[in-house]
Image (tube, rainbow, N blue to C red; front, side, top):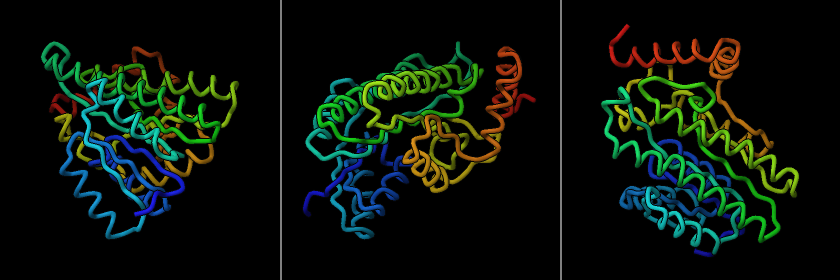
Length: 263
């Protein structure tokens, strides 16, 4: 298979939103570098996509909770003519802060915060060195736009970091060259494996990964800074800004309590 003219890097590609990004970008003709911890699932995805499209697809099993493996991903991606980076790897956890496992929380912070930070920095350095335009999408969550979320405290905090980092770096890039679009995707509930991994059941209606990704790619290419799929979720975010932060956190906590049967 010949090298494609333009490639997309997708982390967390083995399932959910990342998997759907891979599908839709392949249909658009981008070569792919797909990264995830589970190599067998990456290979299965590659085989499926090869039956649907002729694009060059490369897989790289890597555990992004380790900084060395984040560096490996950056080095492999830099060998390709990148145009799009989908900085998607991440997961959540659920439970009272004093009862959740510290080791799992630290791993979540390593993936949701540290890995996203490293991939973003390396991607921007790549585009600056090449002097070419590009698109970077940091996958956060609508949780990152809220003051906090009891029973998912660490997850909400990790996504708030991603949103804040994206906004700040985006302004630096705008003043420097404006060639790279840096955006944050902040969806509400999406019908993926997230709830099984986080041990939760969504209290709100979810949307399909296909719908989420289609909207995200459309807005990314238009240069939207913060991308929030669905009118209802956008309205909810706006409303949360109209109430005192303490009340917004309390409301978020009530939504989380529904998952625990505490109403």
